[in-house]
Length: 245
Image (cartoon, rainbow, N blue to C red; front, side, top):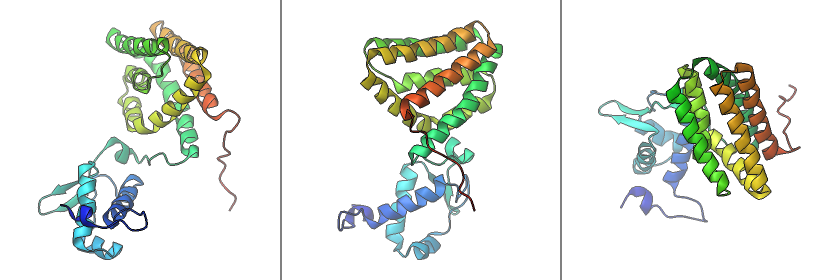
């Protein structure tokens, strides 16, 4: 039995090692410890958190299992390189984060769609078409498939033949999925017509890229993302202005 399993749960709170794990995870995902950076020595972390070495090691083991850190024999624990940690994206924690993600997508994906018109080949068009077929089948079954939706958008980013567009979308996969899931739930509650409208938006993007019309593709992608954001937020867009000093 692990040390973490031996720790009692008091007042409904998680074991102490779980708290240490969450704290270290937050530091890693927020960039306090950068990708490939060595974590402080176990004895130093034990002092920082005021816990025993076995409790700390249980938290570190959980970080290893989650792929956030890697141990190098004789050298210590290092933050594992990943797309998300490398680009510095923090996890989605608030509704404001979802709104910010939509804002960012309106720059990256709109430009990516324009480039896709100029650089796509038949293989990547086939990949888009396959994802579109999955979306069509789901719509016919009155379902929304976030996996097919993301695959469609990723194929367009790949069609730009610029790895930064595709790698950015991959790094934002978890963030985009949150918005897609909430958007899908909203569509399901609105009925079949709403699902069909979204499918037509995807078809318009695809057809624009097939025909090589960059301006039309950019506009179609912009309209699609804006509509998605509007369906999700309605009139409830947040004011993201920075507070006055």
